[in-house]
Image (cartoon, rainbow, N blue to C red):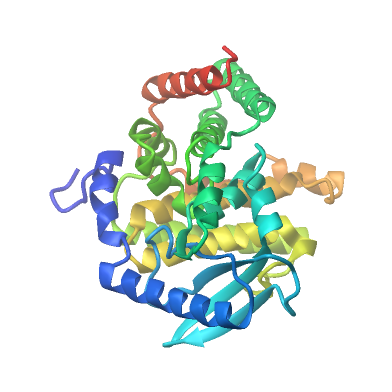
Length: 367
């Protein structure tokens, strides 16, 4: 390694940098004050049970230009709209109204990714108006939820099945590395579902894992995703390469372009492609704020999502077979994205995968 090269990056190194990216206290105070102002004005016009700041502000991850998300909980649904946007002190405030019954339901039963994420959105929020303690009650309910044992067990069985295939196909290093990344992604999701913040989206996975004390898992992911430095050049190269792949896959599959999907916002007709594009956009945003390690992980995660679309049941069988052909330009480009950096250290990563799998199994009483 040349003296000018950045050193190999690790979970410990990433953890030391995360405090740099927290919302400055003055900005957080200002935003919470704006939320209180909106909540107070709303309570004068309508009955409000509680008001909770959610999203990036609640997790102290917002920038000065980020939207401010506020949930107003009301006794009934006698309001004209469930969503509205206000501009207060040059901050866009997105106000969502839900009833107390809806809030109770969202935080009331064990579930899977979507249900737990929705519960965590409320449970990890910051109350700015809570005269009866209802928001505090919701938080306790949300924190007590657990992922469905049957879903955890099914995910773990998939992980062990893939590990068995890795053992049988060690001659195909590229496939084995990609399969290992899939195992780690599943284990990361399970680890985060068991934590109060739950699994939100790829953009926050590494930070949330570190917040949950999962440094060992983060180290394995950094290695498996071949992230060797926190250099901006590495992050920009990764996001550029993945953007080319995503745009090509969208075109080949007959989806709207990457930029068109981003303009659509929520596009239910192209849900998977839309999620891929939004994940890539998150990676590009992370580069802009200097979170280069996380940007590389998120971009490469988007690449894995994009290539997975080639298995879509909506594509003709002949088209799917052509895409999967060894040496096809899309497959070659995909593999090139993961070719930079040192090969994944199987001997170090596999024991971590097995230990994490065993821990998740013990958490639901299934060895």
